[in-house]
Image (cartoon, rainbow, N blue to C red; front, side):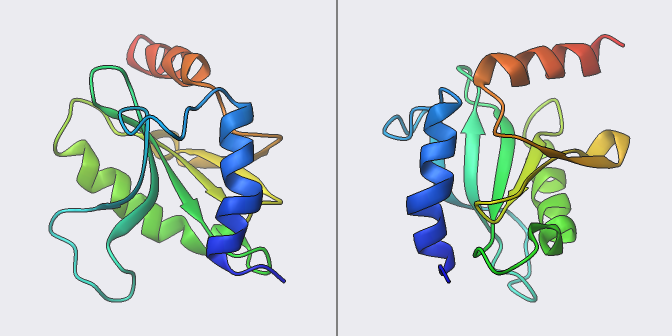
Amino acid sequence: MRNEATTRKELIDPALTKADWNLKDKLQVDIEIPVDGYDKEPWNGVTDYCLFRPNGDVIAVVEAKRTSRDPRVGLEQVRHYVTEIEKRQTFRPFAFLTNGSDIFFWDIESETYRLVSGFFSPEDLENLLWLRQNK
């Protein structure tokens, strides 16, 4: 059984890299970003990963859980994160919830989350954002 740190290193990081996210570029992917105005209970108020657009806006948040947990236990946690991040930019980011095995994509504006086969690339997320903003 993997803890969260090992899950991130062995499963999530490679999956993000496969989706064309450069984990070495802090302008594209950064980890453990504090969320403003957050009470430390019951969560720690820090996103696991933020995926950034070239202009610095957060296009998606990734909430990681250890492999033995259902990633959907983080739904309310990630809802808070994207709601707080939205206050600092012009749109609400998308969200991914994962335990390294299952990856759920959530567009909180539509209230639907779904199991996906992998993380979306920067281009995929830009296209989804464009569709959301121009529907």
